[in-house]
Image 1 (cartoon, rainbow, N blue to C red):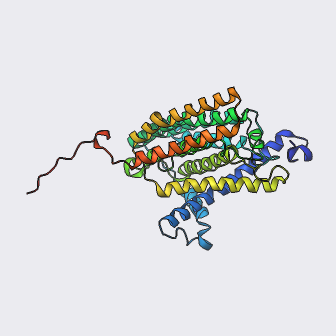
Image 2 (cartoon, rainbow, N blue to C red):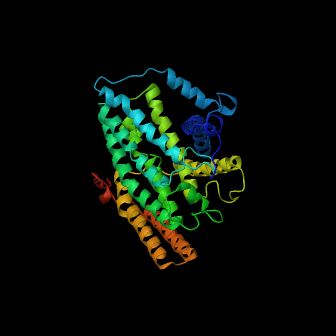
Image 3 (cartoon, one colour):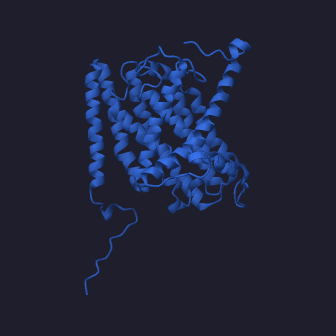
Length: 379
């Protein structure tokens, strides 16, 4: 694999090449985040039969820039009861892991910040650091609602990281490598979503929880805990949490498209230049993002007990079962066609079970801290 000749050709410095790539990724990430906020508002408005932003610029295209300028000039307030250093450092520790994930992602065959042999493992390790920033924001704010939101977020993220990692390890078993570029290269004829659909369903579900997106947006619920762990933040520090959220949304979308949708490889192969491969990666990441927006516009928020029960009583068991099935198929060297059929059956049964469970009439005895309403006799 040859790399684009930035620093190495013109200056003879390999580290300068990496710095130039990082700067490009940061600039593109900022632009993507600005328009993701605009795109989400327009998509959700379309689902709700509204127009969305229309005033700022043609068709509201400058709304994201207007919001960014507003946040930059707003006052940065620190609560009197807050722990100063913890409170001020938390936004950075929330954003930095998301940026580090972008370092390992394959945007094209010949373009990325760095191609890591253990790229998938690197993504797992770095994403775990985000939990520390969330907990610091909740604990350092000196606010009980922020603390409750931070604890909820930490419990949710730690729980759903288990099925996320196990499902992706099942895919890595089939691929035989943790190198993200190698995994993409293996999908020249068929993407892994056709072979591992159950892993894709588990990945999307856990991804929504890790991103605190609906229906797993309990840690930032306005109606319950008035905004969650960043309720005391304002101005540029609050905007860093939003930047981290939408940058993580974009990073997860590229990561998912590389693992399951073929990334820059499928369906045109590696004969196309890196420019078209970047476009293909962008299109597939937008498909993942649209799926997330669609879920947000259609599904209601879960309760905390429902969220944790679904993870520990269903999702983790299914993910380990998938890992076991993949191990058996690899051990006995059965063809991938049979493995794909078994995975499709498992995905259909899993989604069907979720639908049937959701369609059941809720029982008040399963509510945490609930009570049955007394029947009032008719006069």
